[in-house]
Image 1: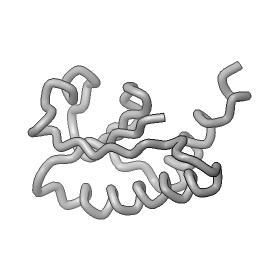
Image 2: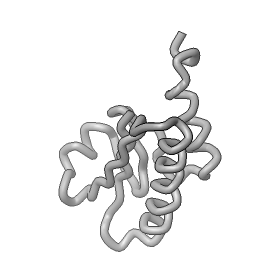
Image 3: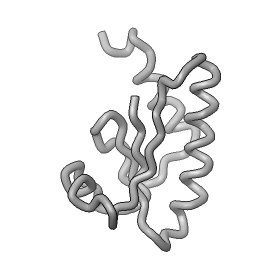
Length: 93
């Protein structure tokens, strides 16, 4: 699973959010015993076309496996639930 966090330079929410949410992804990887979650930070100024393709209109935004899932900063718990749901094969039945 690829988690992309879209941010922009100078975004006051982005820096802190990226660190907290990145730590969550690392913790989940430890629990699952591998690199099931790949974390990618995307500067929208550097990758504007990609951000536009996904419909990113504000930062921070989060895409999972190429799908824009959060258009604003989710809570750690909300992101955890989303990631765990997507990682559980039973949720894709």
